Image (tube, rainbow, N blue to C red; front, side, top):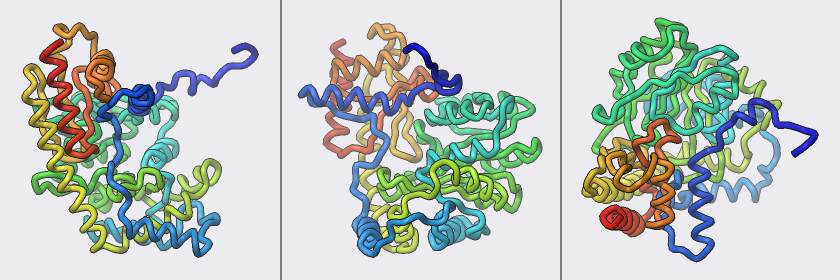
Length: 397
């Protein structure tokens, strides 16, 4: 292209590998190939009916206009009440802003807090968009490794060893995408103490907070805000109520931060969809229906998790720890790379799609080139078929 150029920040931006994997899978399927898509990061369940009906009512009753930039007051009250009810956190509507999904929530927090020259610590493996969100502020991501042998658990000790002394912020995702690792309550306290000793912000993304296995409980940084104020918690309706397309998330934080994000949001997207807000309000306030819907999804995810982890673990040379939360298995295929003639996780995923017709996401997108991410947000039959295809291809290759 001549006569114009992209801005430096956009020209340097890495596209989303998860979105790219989905596009490749759809393109191959459109050519007539039966593709088992285990790349997708969204529930395969429909939005619960009681939530959808609330959205329909919003349309029918004319709730289709602008709302407050920060979100409807009743919804912000309901989000604050969620944290009070589930975590014992003290919060009010002044602590909450509603966003167009959790991705925008984390992005807006980064825009409000980080500047050129700042260092922001990210536990690795990390969600694919975190480093790019940090770079778009002018700050630099500082990667803090976690280990497969330890279940990829984030620790304050790892921050102490690897994060710069002048770290401005720490971004932590629990349950983690892609590993499924869940931070323990006592370790979360140590991480908060590490941040407090340096005056660093903790950005705590808990998008998958309702999907934990084997009786685990979610520890939210929201409960620690009286202990340390510089905590921003982000969440969403997308996974809990299978509302990915509704684009509804939030930030819970100090009122001054929430107000600053509101000012920023007023010049970018303005308010989240009024219809989505009405549906989310119903989801958050009908606690009994939510419990029934979430418990049903969680039981299915748990069954799929066993199928996937057991199947992948039976492939000789593959290590596949059982995820503690979310709906992904992050399997180490690196012992097979040389035999299969692949140079890394991206090439491995290309071969799995081309030869086994199974769509996955390369681990290098998440900071670990040894691994491949498999989503079990697909029905049991497709999970079983996908794992069978991978096992058969590896055995024959």
